[in-house]
Length: 396
Ligand SMILES: *Cc1c(COP(=O)(O)O)cnc(C)c1O
Image (cartoon, rainbow, N blue to C red; front, side, top):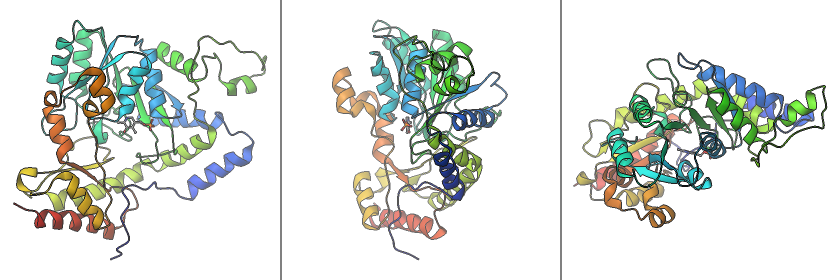
């Protein structure tokens, strides 16, 4: 078995991706155009399910841009409140700050990594006099769809919008055939370098409502009412455009869209490879007093493998565990350092660790193990043996 270091993540890029990008480079059209349009159509077809009538997709240069466009289109105004889990990446919350609105952090369910509907109801109740409760941003952590029925019920009760952070959830088809990211008002997927399919940097918005789609489409390209591509291919006046708003520059260039199309074509194969690795981990880490397996279920995209250490059965902290793994040449990560402990959010909103007991428990015990398509059996075995030997050495 090779003892070269096992990286935490590695994109799966083949000849198809190389050729798709080369073709664009040789075509003379590098920015948003035919490739981006085709990518949007193909992606929409992929995630279309029983509840997706009228679903359309908008390609963007990152999921962060997409979340910003979604929040703007949903009418989030200065001082409004938007509810999201503390256990997420800062992108989910920062876009709320872009609009001078305020994120309200919510704890996760016990033993899980998803927003807790009961805690969400409490948070809405407790902030009644602090601002208008405008939206919920659930995060499909790991690509396992969260309890969207509860989220939608709570949103409906309070007249709130729902913006799904579906950065991890492609592909993520639930038992009833719906795809995570197509249930709320807007869903946003990420194609960042280590996500389930990648364009290096990029994202995709899924939306059903025509007015929301139109607003995001205009704001995506400088608040201009026609995309550059349409302007140059339309036979009418090619030079004329109108600026309707001070918009943003969030379009996805064709070089990246072509890469995305090639990745989309192999998305199910990549999923199968991650599922196979997760099955080995699940099997070999189960029935151990030292670990808790990641919760799983229908539609789990297995973007991460968030193993939880049972710290009460071990004489080692999670941080030291990660160092020991590194000494064995195994890279790992943590998802996430909660936002309520981050200096900016903690200080600005005067947040207290004790108000997020489940999030803190998840944070302190979680290790994300390598789970990338193309990992060899030998690499998977090394991870398992490394984790198990450290646990054995530090068993109580
Ligand atoms: C990666 C990620 C984002 C941001 O995605 P970008 O495409 O890098 O902007 C947002 N939310 C979550 C949960 C993520 O993991």
